[in-house]
Image (cartoon, rainbow, N blue to C red; front, side, top):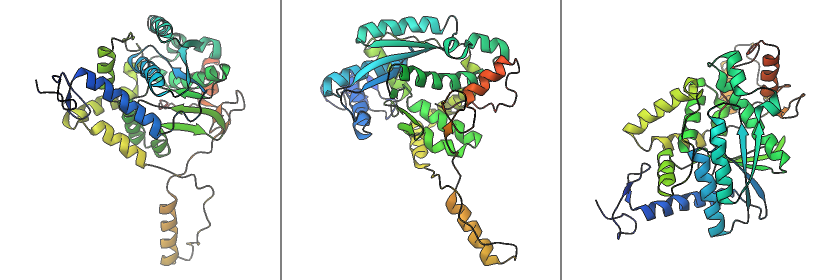
Length: 348
């Protein structure tokens, strides 16, 4: 093997999937952590010392690496932040109950408080019950909507207003592809943001692993000998995201930089909520100059974003009078699942 491309002393043991760089184990661990620290600093993810921040912890590789790295970086660079693990129990027997045992061990190992919130407690349904009712097709719609809201509710119980998730570069690229394939232009720009917040909610979400490749996260977990749960959700193979993931993997084989290329492209898709359109000249007269002016105005306005408000039932932020979670629970309780509910897999 060649000498490490960074230190030039040790033997290269790892070829980075992100850029093909041949480096030693020590340099890989250092550069991986340093890149995440750079992401945190450049995006001002922790602007307030003394802040309590929740880490969405599933026990999987991403959230486990996130918790481990943040503990290390907080001690190394003194962010002055207190991290709390927040887990969601979807109620999937043989999957989530086992992964939560991993989270509990991590909480002890990292010295972090752990809070667990369940679907059954919040919505009166477990995912096993949902799947029994609606079948496997479309079940990820329910889980995605419920999980996002459950994280917010769990954080509020802890009096926390900032949630960190383990979404990596592959996840973000997949979501961008999904929204593109569905023609969901308004979400394309939002899903690529590293820090998101809403004018109607005090909850902020951040993705410190946004530029980290999934393969490198696995390598980091392996070389740090981290304890994580590696079994895939038994219901996820039916999800539309799986198709986007397969497409992304094929692109990565041809061009390893495809993942970050797609992420960067998503970052460029910024849309403005321009409000009511300006009055344009009438085209009733057939005046070609007026028609040209109207077309030009439409091009400049671009796609309109939905106005975000609050759900009448639960108060959660929603672009409709009733949020998706409440609509889905209503359909389940009425034994009429997915009636008058638009089925779209909730993006990360």
